[in-house]
Length: 386
Image 1 (spheres, rainbow, N blue to C red):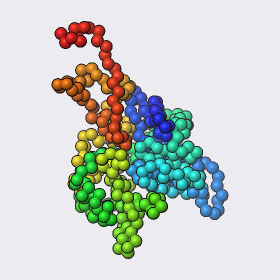
Image 2: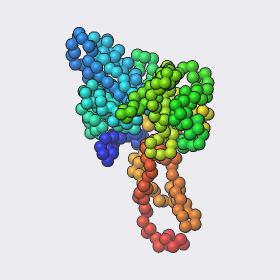
Image 3: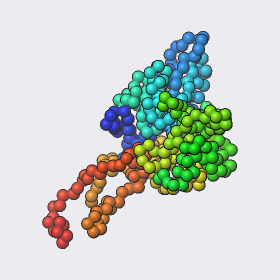
């Protein structure tokens, strides 16, 4: 196992080395399900008064975070009933930002809060990478198995009783440029208070698949700047009565399907990009939703550069060859074999597109290249070009 902690120690990155020597990143979504699965089972080992109100535990997640946590809540409640425990788990979905987990954390009712970017708030550890590491190592100690196998077990147990194979689901985020067509067809409608028009464009593009839509949700903001949520159906009803809440256009909308699949469209807060998140039972279903977004709002998605959850963890589906440890050291290899070309007075570098797509998964305003691995010139003729 390999671990990395970011500069302010609120996110933990995890990689696993496979038998063939390749290294693969473990998705934060999967870590969140693993920690949650452990915590739910820990809670249900304790004793609670049989009568009265059930002991309540919240499982929080931000809007673009895996539906695996939705099934974790169902799993926990079903297991509590089976064990005769007077306990209830409840899901709370928040806008992007782990700060939205603070209320439940402060009143002691939060079991876990997960954000797909890697911010994970665990009971007694608020955005604490060391706390995450504690739970990760504990999970491995208890299971006695590899991390991939442990995550596979957790996701299998969480989804099994509901007929869902979470290990086969695909999570993907793409980041097309925000263009004039998107501004006109999506943003303008949210800013004017007519998000139903934007949604109808997406529903039309989805075709028959739109019949499976369960609900559409949007983020609201109150006069004191507290955020909330409202379904599109309720918003339209309130609007007709002149009582429509203020919605946050940049947070867009999340469309949930009856089978647990979903698609979210929002705008980056740091770049001129649109964030399109999809989670579905198959890659084909993911592509269907992405293509509908393209058709409805005119964004351009480069499907070949998309990063999926199956790219991140070897346990879940077919995975392309991963980078070796040598390749994960970072920096830019200036050797000619790595694509160094010269034109005039400028030097251009060819970057691996998968690496660029990996950068785009984070909210970066830019990158600072660091040149490493410069091969020393040991032959004067080489330097002179002879």
